[in-house]
Every structure is written in structure tokens, then in C-alpha cells.
Image (cartoon, rainbow, N blue to C red; front, side, top):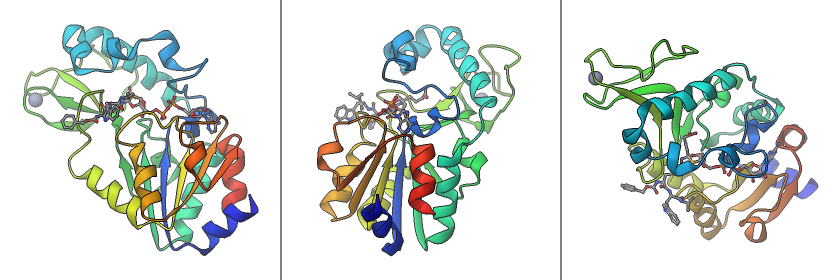
Length: 236
Ligand code: BJW
Ligand code: ZN
């Protein structure tokens, strides 16, 4: 912990990669693990473009339910510690796999949302993209002004990440002196490859997770525990 604090204190360029675990203490379920969403729901039935085309209403019911539970959640001390860190550093990039919007609500500035945003909708016909925070949505599936069907503004398996965002994330990871990897199982690509990229560029890598992950063996420091407790201590 002391060593990690020193690395963070002395670095001017920091990149952070977060995953579902950072929102776990806000009451938002993670995907994998015993309490994870994928225990109850199969990814290929809900989080792929094929699943959506097969049964848009079913997929929308799942997202509407998740929007409902996320709307009640509040940012936790882990999200807030990252806002504090952003204020301290000249070069700071927050890269998240999360779609829940809790980093925004905590007050983080620029956020690279690799997997999109559950609070945005996108038209399948005209490609319009707009925010919609209504919970529940009045009609499922929701529609665009043009009459086309809308989909959640998230990235499903097999889909590319939002235009340009991946390049920015790669650039930040390669330029960082320290990469913090928080609350992610690090099994979803290309997000997980940022760790390898930062490592090749000689960044110090600090992992915060309650469990061991596939990257635990290749990081410089693996802090085992809840991010809502560890991050405030690391940043203070
Ligand atoms: C705590 C904690 C606490 C708990 N404190 N910690 C290379 C190799 C192999 C496969 C691929 C590859 N490249 C691409 C692929 C395919 C695929 C992929 O990665 N598959 C693997 C799973 C096998 N990737 C893709 O398809 C991606 N697209 C792509 O590559 O496109 C290429 C392309 C280019 C051009 C044209 C076409 C295509 C897209 C991936 C999209 C992922 N989408 C999801 C759903 C988002 C929408 C939604 O929310 O519904 O994103 S899947 C899901 O997993 C979600 C998450 O962001 C993502 C990662 O999960 P995360 O955040 O790591 O959560 P968990 O639950 O796994 O882990 C939580 C962790 O927290 C655990 O470790 C806990 O221990 C910990 N924790 N409490 C600290 N309090
Ligand atoms: Zn439209």
C-alpha cells in the first residue's frame, strides 16, 4: 500500500481502468462471479446484437430493470476518490467499462466509456443517439422520432468500441506512468489488453480487486480488498 501511494504521488500521468467492481459497493451487480448478472442471464441471450434482433422486447426489459436499479444507486467513496485524483494530476485519463454513469454522477470530468452508456439510446434506422433517463421507459422497445426502433447505447459482444475512443484509451495507457486497474475481471477484450500495453510502455500497474484475476500475476502491485475502502486511502 505504501509503495503504491508513493508511485501515485510521484506520477504526473495517470490512467485508470475501471470495471463493474467499483460500483459493487453502490449496490450495482457485477457480471461474473457468484452474485453476478451472468449467473442468472446468459450473455448471448441478452448482450449481443443477435439477441436484440431476435427479441428486442426481452433485451429491453432486462435493460429497463437494470436502469431502474442503477437509478437508485449512489456513487461510493471509490468513485469519489478518483475525482480527487483527477484534481491532483495534470494528465489523468479515466477509462471505464461501466455503463452505469456513476463516474459522471461522482463528478469525474472526461470519461472514456469503452462500453457505452446505459442512459443513452440509439436509433437502428437513422443512427440518432440521445440521452434518456426515464425509469421505467414508458414503452418497450422505445422508438426514435423517425419511427425507427431504439437500442440501448451500450457495446455488445462482437461490436466495435465507440469511434475514436479506443485509440484515446490506448494512447493514455501507453503514456501513463501509473495505470490503476480497479474492479475488473480483466477477461473482456480489447479493454483488458490496456494492461499489457501499459506494461510494455513501462508503466507501474496497480490492481485493486477483492479477488485474484488473470492479470494479478503481471501487475506491480495487487491490492486485495473493496475499492471503496482502498481507493480513498491510496489517494489521500
Ligand atoms: C470488486 C469489488 C469491490 C467486486 N472492489 N473489486 C481477444 C481475445 C478473446 C476474445 C476477444 C478478443 N477480442 C475481442 C474478443 C471478443 C469479446 C471478448 O472479450 N470476449 C471474451 C469475454 C472472451 N469482445 C468484444 O466482443 C468487444 N468488441 C470487440 O472486440 O470488437 C472488435 C470488432 C472490431 C471491429 C468490428 C467488429 C468488432 C466488445 C465487448 C463488449 C462488452 N460488453 C459488456 C456489456 C456492456 C453492456 C451492458 O452493461 O449490458 O460489457 S459484457 C460485460 O463485461 C460488460 C463489462 O463492461 C465487461 C467487463 O466486465 P467487468 O467490468 O470486468 O465486470 P466483471 O463482473 O467481470 O468483474 C467484476 C470484478 O470486480 C471481479 O473481478 C470482482 O472480483 C471485482 N469486484 N466487487 C473491487 N467492491
Ligand atoms: Zn431514427
